Amino acid sequence: MPTVSILLPVFNAIDDLPRSMNSLLNQTYPDFEIIALDDGSVDGSGEMLDSYAQADKRIRVFHENNAGALGITLNKAMEHARGKYLARQDADDASHPTRLAEQVKYLDSKPQIGLCGSWTWFIDSSLGPLFSLELPDDPARLTGYLEKGMNPFVHGSIMGRSELFHKTGGYRGSFAEDFDLWLRMSEITRLGMCRNLGYYYWRSIGGISAGAHTRQIKLIKLFLKLKSERVRYSKEISKWEVEYSNIANMPTIETITDERQASMHYSRAIQLLRRRIFMAAKNELALATAGQGVYAQKARRNLHFFGLAPLLSAVYHLLESREPFYFSRTLPNGTQIPTFNLPPGT
Image (cartoon, rainbow, N blue to C red; front, top):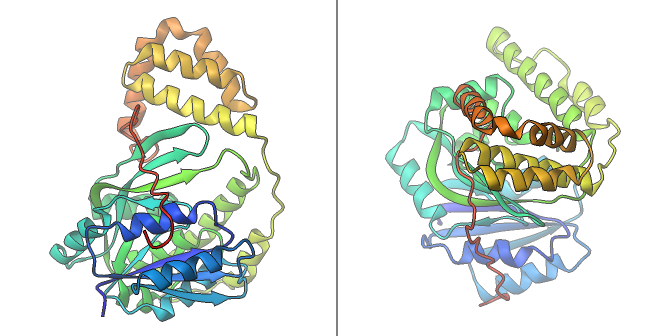
């Protein structure tokens, strides 16, 4: 039996799938299986998965009708998993070659930890590397983030003990399903963070829903309420399925690309300001002002007062020290991200 089972849900991801698959096949740790669940793809993703499986026996492909909910898809994949540890990866992301080795070593050496994440590069499909998320390996702080409504784990970066996933009953729903599961797992085990930049998370400027943030906040409040009920009454009192359904069906509106692009340039500018790299920060702010929305407005305001850049740098650094979850610590300027774009069977 393999030590690690990697749950890889796939839906119409044919353009990004080679990067994801080959990053896993190039792992330095060989004792794994990939549970690739084709969730009703119609773009050829399923056929591509089959071609990978023919070339590598560690890949097991299952074809299903579209479930319409990521939680359902992941639970189906989990039913086929045989590994001691369960890991996740998304079909449009990638893993560093040593990711599995580092996380297996981490969990083997810390039996009290049931779930761990990995430090993660955030990459925009148009702008390139943005920043890295590097949270502390501190179970109390990681659980504290969850209890404040903040998810410290990039979903695709996690690895955990298989029996704990089953003990909690697995995923529920299709939005914030990972936050809900981590909360429930935090009640029966300790959470940790593998301090290696092991995961590459791609974000797209396009296709961002303006209403999705509001929906996410409401769902997080619901899951925190359910946690409070479990702690107080040893069970959930609320009819969560009804409340969840009402929130999940909230209408959303897609934002325009210029607004998203402005937010990315502004984020990079603030990171550079913290590091006192003033000219590069000014250039990013100027790029942000060409966009639209609230971040373009913030960029114009920062440019107007850019003579106070050293003071702004100190303020942003102070904010980072108070709320380390919100601000990543490293801007990978000039970092080359592997493409992993190899054909099946390479």
